[in-house]
Length: 553
Image (cartoon, rainbow, N blue to C red; front, side, top):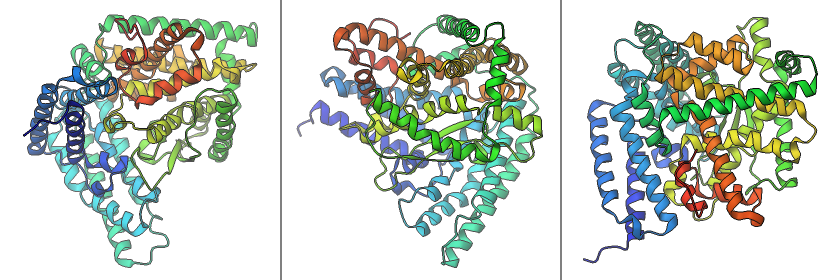
């Protein structure tokens, strides 16, 4: 029997490997738009995780048996993306072991909001799928409870309890009106019973989590070896941590120097903190936060077109809504439609409101981070031309291979969005807006602090209190948001990728511009960069550059 051509063999294998991934993580398949996976939660039991590990090893062996050198340039990149995708999942199973030590990694599986928010099928069908998923929540949580170590970092436990309790509240409160307009009482009753059963299971799980927070404030650090492995398998970056740390420190110092110099130009004799506080006081009222965010998006979008920054490949728009309760550790977030979704195009820009039980000081501190200038920078990051425009290129990109749509790197997705904040202020959009530039630098400093604190918390013994102080001193943050940022670092060491990805994109742009010479354009670079999905950035250098060099940083 004749063997298929290498290109065909790779395409067939990669499609099978991705379907195996969706088979184990059906929520991933459902969210990207493959609705045959609707209504299912992953089975993370020891039997199934062991089976999945074997499946991954066989997949890697089959992939590596192919002759990658015989593939064309585009397929070779897809091959490398696929290989990293499998290696990363194996690394998570065997080395990071979040089932044992990081319950925060699993809350998202329980998110059924997509069934309610996205109109890809009749509401009755979507409610059935949501109910099916929620019915599985008690068993899913029992598996997690059995897998978790008896003693966990109290910081990770605190954030996890907040997140799982938030999910219970989401089921009880946010989903209370989801059946509005549905006349089939059987569906309504099934859905309501499922959400209460799931919420009760979440309450029990959160209570049991509290008993595991006896590991003290430490215990969250993954250590230097795993940190390097996380970067190698997740971001395709093999570099000494000392080099990565030094590059981040230089960028932090550069941004601190820039912001101090800019502050003196804005208001000679006044300190940065005084100017920051003045900017922070100019913010929407709590009740106006969502509508005012919505109003500024069109102006930013038009600027992309007017200043020829990047192609906007669709007239799709996103909806601005309050962040779901289980995600409120973040200020704002983008929830884009699946790249393979054929019917539902709804994408959601979440903005986190003040909480009802916060006192005046806490409310004011939170809203100060949503002042008008910061809100504009955040909207650039999340929507135009950040995550949402990246999603549009991913969704509407011509002939983009399946693996490129599915397997995206943390450093590309967040690095691109963070890069756009700086890039937009380098265009005519930033002309004569010194306070907006200062705000962009403030956001960069927050990401610089994430970078430094992630490395130090996970490889050098930095405590939560030290990290909180670092954010306050180097990003001009109030204590409450500074502590929230530091807490995120305990369960998300990868949040250094905002700055890491931005620095890799800036270096790639500089090298691309030098090679292109007079043929270079900013729009041309951006469209080329986003033409491959969201791969690990080191994989892009041989494709975009004639002389890629030895380092992505």
